[in-house]
Length: 307
Image (cartoon, one colour):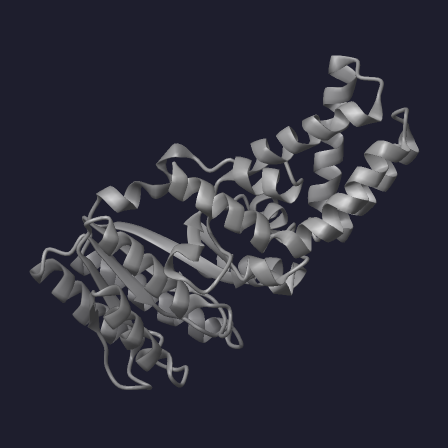
């Protein structure tokens, strides 16, 4: 329990920039309006949009709020705060089976543009799974970014897990093929593949990913497959654009949202999950291994609203 509290306090600290810009505006609306009218809803929607929750998602949240207010016959604006929080929490709930991969023979592909913290997220998750008693193997299949292989090798040492790597510029699919063979031979629980670190040529990216998917399907068909996209929370709506673009070429099963401690745009977590209907499975709020944590909608929204 103390570990969870420790992370929640770090989450509150990490989201301080978002909370300072978000909750002050939201709270001023709840305290500034005594009655619920069109102007109240308009001002509230504007605050949600400014928090990078996005226009479409903000409109949906306001619609849900207005419906609940009418149904419960609520008259005072201040009473809407809890309903607003509950509405956002409900929208962001992660399904119970979201982390089933931990208890199966699994392969997880990590995709995302350069600079979002993808390789670091691979390393952190590897360390956590290892600490939970899992046998973990890394595949350095992001072979085009200079330094990506060496960076992942460093993480393999820090996490105490094995790694399969080739030379810079090597065929990523060939690395995954070797990693799959090693994972089977070594009875690995989870194979984490760092791959696809670019988006400037969608056709090449699609071809590369399809080759990798085919190899996993043909060589390790009984493994549970996940594809996580890693996006940088500090980029706000651009993170949503990246996630949308990658979802066009890959079957994304989860989102890792990094660098939430350095941004006032933390509302993007709400927008991404709502717009794409892909769960945010992990959030990163710092550099330490345990600063990457499973996403908890209640904790996130409570930290955002400073509860």
